[in-house]
Length: 451
Ligand code: PLP
Image (cartoon, rainbow, N blue to C red; front, side, top):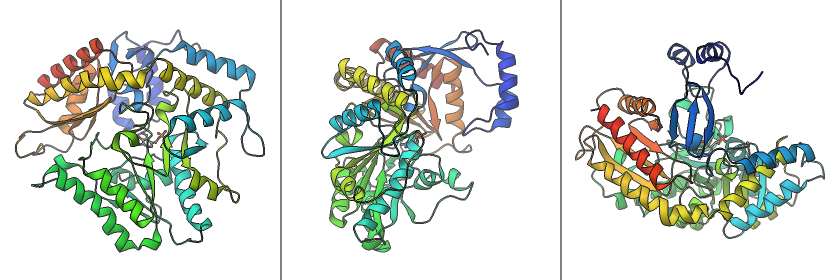
């Protein structure tokens, strides 16, 4: 098949409808509507099969941190495919890309997070984490410590294990999730659930739910707490400042391992290399994927503390994936980290573009439909509401207004996502000030069209 000289759009749509099952999609409905075919991309701009140029304010799925069309990444992938396209890291062998990438990640990660277990995705990495923390406690002579505490509305992936860690009720309703010994506490979503409390009091109360859960379940039964530093797919929910310090205190007090799911927040998205640094926490394990390779190759992993890794190293950990440390994906990830470092992209986000975006994004609160704006670094949300002072939700079925707004954005050549009636962005980290202006202008037009 010649992918560069493709079929007419209608034929592509018909073939897609006939054969392609899309993830997280009502496929019957999509087949009726006609899918949009994306053919190429450069920088922050996608081009579709009909020639529309679309500003991708979601960086694909929160992942294309260095932007599209990086020749260096394509060159590295081709070179590595010629040199060594595949070899495993299972049975007393390794290879240069996996070694170099693990060492580079250890250098970038804070504290004693010096050990990397590779996976093919964030979901796989979180499956690793479930097994690793349980195995860690078993190795320490505490096999009853097997419960992982997570949060409602969290997203940690789509496999049976990671989907169980996640707290999305729609996912739990299908396919027999969750697996045993996963417990969910509330998310710190002040706008929707804070009632009359101040954000600070509400943040503290949400964190203290972790302590209550530990006491109810039994200290001797809880292995770990997992959370995203800033909840992403749940709707870019920036927690009140009181939340994370209290969570860290509780994890320390009860000897609960803290897993920071950095799949979205990692590699610059919050204006630091890791969201844990932005939130001031010290995780024992970090989940990584997405921005690790800027989405150019599928790769994920767990960054593990010296303490946890040294205990795991005392025996054989019966776990791994064919593509753990895949040489092409690892070489691409390494080159991606070189670009992030050499072009000082994270520093530029922190000092230049994130402050610029923050000012414009928060100004959207003046729009009649927008109740609040959340933003840190290059991830933000606005909540649509019919009544700002009561923080009311729309009477229509939840998410209807958000869906309409998302559709208007798409028609106006802007990719924004909606989670219920929250509109979210997570643009490539290389977005310029002029492109931020375009983003805000198209978002405003789309919001106006929803009035
Ligand atoms: N964890 C978080 C925080 C995510 O946002 C995602 C994906 O969106 C995952 C894990 C799962 O990663 P993957 O889709 O690579 O399996």
